Image (cartoon, rainbow, N blue to C red):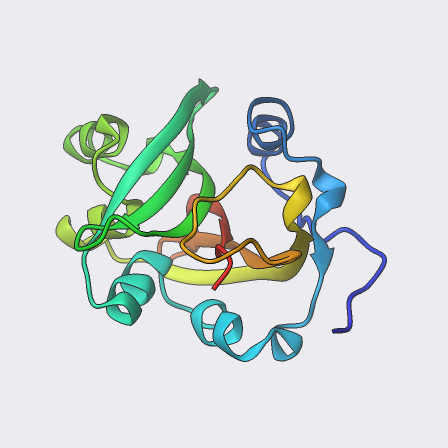
Length: 185
């Protein structure tokens, strides 16, 4: 597996980087850049695309997803949260995520749905018919030992794979920045 010696953290809003580092206890040097083409087959299939992860993982697992919020924060105009995405069918964790949502880009009703913490961001975007584009900012590997424990039915693998993504309006205004990590297969 080819990785670089450079951290894979792209330019992110300062509030998001600080929330990841201080609240989620994710050292930013944990993430090692990895070209999408060098991801293992299954992580590449689930990460290397321009769709939202909620829909992608729901389709792959054959189940709608629910959000399990670990913690939230509000800094400046950002709603920040650390989450697990779980299938509704089996309650299996299918993603660990950290996101920063630009609340100013959403209506009051959409903000209420976001901050209620019951629905994944991707589901909210689709339910409210909010047009968006997904633009992965980079892929990475990370030692599982440096990540929060991600509940999984399988024994923990030594490394996990993920991506940084930005969801934006078609006109370019960012809606959210997201750290998306797959648990061990």
